[in-house]
Amino acid sequence: MKWLCRFLKGPKPGEPSRRRPQVAAGEGEGALWHQRPARPKIDPPRNENEELVDRAIAEPLAEAVKPPREKTHRGEDSNDDEDLTRAVQDSLNMNPYTPYNPYPPSQAQPIGHRVCGGCKHEIGRGHYLSCMGIYWHPQCFRCRSCGHLIRETEFTLLGTDSYHKLCYKELHHPKCDVCLQFVRPRVLGKPERSALQTVINCIPTNGSGLIEYRAHPFWGQKYCPSHERDRTPRCCSCEKMEVQPRNTKYMSLGDGRGLCMECLGSAVMDTSECQPLYHSIRDYYEGMDMRLDQQIPVLLVERQALNEAMEGESKGPHHMPETRGLCLSEERTVSSILRRPRIGGNRLLGMRTRPQKLTRRCEVTAILVLYGLPRLLTGSILAHELMHGWLRLKGYRNLNAEVEEGICQVMSYLWLESEILPSSSRHAQPSSSSSSSSYPATSSEKGGISHTGKKLGEFFMHQIANDTSTAYGDGFRTAYAAVNKYGLRQTLSHIRLTGGFPV
Image 1 (cartoon, rainbow, N blue to C red):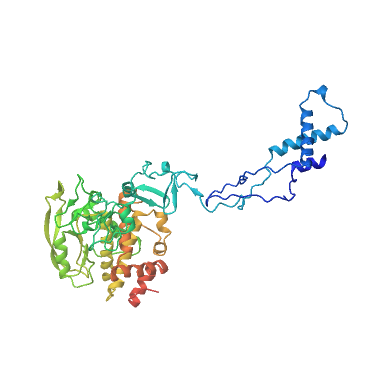
Image 2 (image 1 turned 180 degrees about the vertical axis):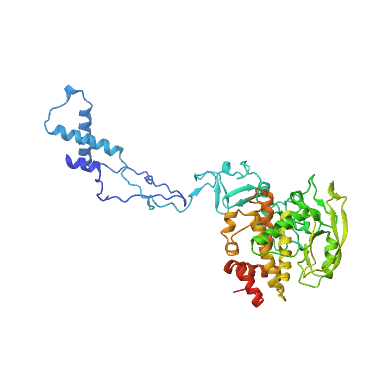
């Protein structure tokens, strides 16, 4: 009887099966493994041995359903009958074939494994969207910006993020800070439309297929290239363009220059208003052990008067495209601004000028500065021109333009630095600590400089440091490196002896 139980229970775990498993493969993805259904067969004639086996199975089953009093007591054979009964029941419930899966559980199936780019869940069977190797459930295909479903046939794909074409344009396309419209680039000929351009509704580009716009290197103000030709007002001090449309217009100075409201707040408008600033810069020079014994007149003049004086001056190069200051060494008559003009709308009214004859009593006749510039810019111009006067009065002769303009730019830069940086930061600078141990009080130490004024000062320092001209730009960078390495006094002594900067 035990051999019959083992026969009905089948092979034990780990014991090789004598019957070959049947495998049914799927159609390339997510294969389902199951037993192939057996073909119907005609039962063969039953022999005598099979009838004996059926009788041996049927008797214990009939015995199991009898009431307890009717059960036979056959001793050890009762246990064998129970084992046989359980074996028959297990054989009826068990699956005789073990499914065969060629892919281990840890290995992803090669086809049909898709993850939604929206919800990050696996995409099963059913409808889905795909683009450039990314898949979505239809309900997950939403704009990253507004969160609404994307139903249009044109959209923008940035990485794995999808956008409506208008949402992408609002979010990523550069917008002009002047006209507040999307940048209208300069188009050269007929543009060739790129794939990205087609997706985002053909944003106009230049001939190379790129979006083109301008940006200020310091302020970062973005604007259309067309504003460089359409006479959009630009501040003559900070170089920012006027934002349109806007109720507040730039102030017109009457000589072709415009001034923004931020720069107008600290603008120096007449000669008398410039005198306190001039004396504070002379004090700064004395603090650097560079005292000036002669009194050099300082005049604020209009643009035309400065240009006329520059044409008659034979010494030195002039900073182009516009000269804002001049150290005169010849006698002439100059028209200076006598009284500060009043503001009327967006114009200056009531300006009074006075012709003034300048006579030469020393190597320097006068210092002329363009009127209407902010205090820090006016001061940096004065510091530059005063250094020209100091060099001439101290006997520095026949210096080339790069050396003379370079060291003058260094003095302008150092004065701006003293105005906008705290005293602790200034003393840490090698260019200052090696020059002098005493400094005059500055507006930053007195708490008189605003955040706007500090940003303007940083911009003027940026202009000096990044000037592209040979005399003013390259000269400053060479001079500033020498002053940082050797100190101002030793650099000036080397210039006197050799006519150049120490290396």
